[in-house]
Amino acid sequence: GENVEQHPSTLSVQEGDSAVIKCTYSDSASNYFPWYKQELGKRPQLIIDIRSNVGEKKDQRIAVTLNKTAKHFSLHITETQPEDSAVYFCAASKGGADGLTFGKGTHLIIQP
Amino acid sequence: SAVISQKPSRDICQRGTSLTIQCQVDSQVTMMFWYRQQPGQSLTLIATANQGSEATYESGFVIDKFPISRPNLTFSTLTVSNMSPEDSSIYLCSVLPGLEQFFGPGTRLTVL
Image 1 (cartoon, helix red, strand yellow):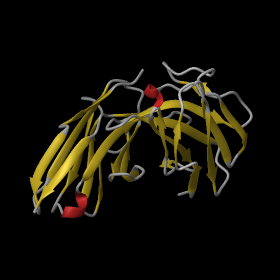
Image 2: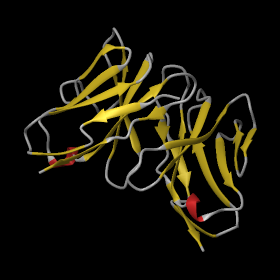
Image 3: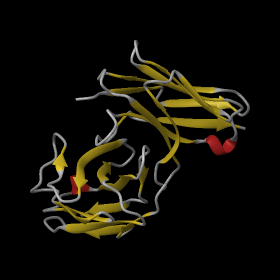
Image 4: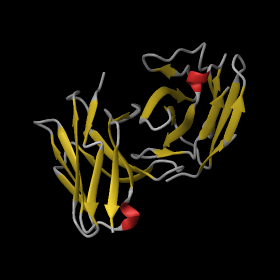
């Protein structure tokens, strides 16, 4: 089955700097790659996603890039703010009826 | 998106007992999923629940331990049977109303 690796497990950045979280996947049939943000005690919230027919997608301060050949995708957050502090999970699926395989998560800490 | 509710929001149970978790969606959805999130960990897919057919379980999860019902397109239940302390987790349902997967608020289960 699919295996998703996520790095780093913890990332501390100064407020206003950029943060990058990287994930790799193993199943070349995977074609859908969402990113979720989970604040303490809350449900995971979808923040951005990308499909395999696209190399990059941007939504304001958040962007995701996908390299299908290398089987890796990354989350980029620019101009980080205190409210960006949370655990971020990448995931992969083959789409359609398939559930998601999650990475282990990255605890993002924004230092004031 | 979709509005998803779960009951109960939390429970404390004795080992050897069973708990049934309910998931209700405000619109009809074909695909529903059940995930487990152990304390401080990532999310793991338990099973996919389609209306009108048997649930499909992931490796490591069996129907006798986690029976699932899906009586209609807006409702599903997950039962955690013969519980042990290792079953202490957050259990989340999720739905795929379109192309994106959304999560319910979760049920926090503690087994003593």
